[in-house]
Length: 117
Length: 113
Image 1: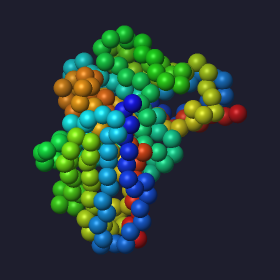
Image 2: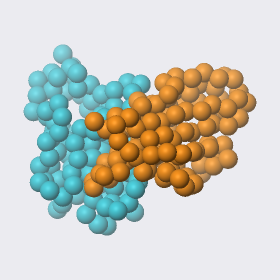
Image 3: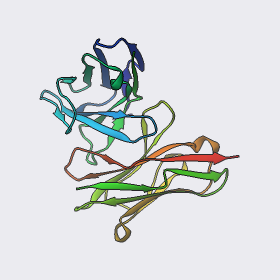
């Protein structure tokens, strides 16, 4: 149980284009989903927290107009990188917190590697 | 504010040897504590978690961790390392009632044959 998927797993795009990444909880309902960014050989940096049906809460320094997050249902959240630039190239990982979990456990997706040319 | 410190960004052990990955946390309230493992180009997999029940927590793949409040530590151990244990390990803390996880810097575990 507690499986989270991400799509696509890898994407290459041209500078200036927008890229959408999907995060799905496959076998549970997730009231809260999180989006992280990870640079090579570094830890995860929380970008934003999204609650189903409400606006995402962004961490300090994260541009909300650039990283659009939509959490339209209890099993799907999307991250759109708008007008991507090479510095946006990174590994993006989502996680989901199970609705019934009493221990704040986050289950992570497999990640999406974005390369902006 | 919460924080997590993982001592040693890189740990190397021989196959069959004891694995010890250190994690110390800072929290103003009793925390939840987690260990995650990350294999190359993959997401994070939950190894184990402490939620205020038993202080010695057993996880998957033979790993366990002990919560020591007096030392504010949650070190991860495995009696006998296997080649497949080579990965990046992250310790994380969250406050009860809070949504966020705070991660340590990660420890890369290398297993020597």
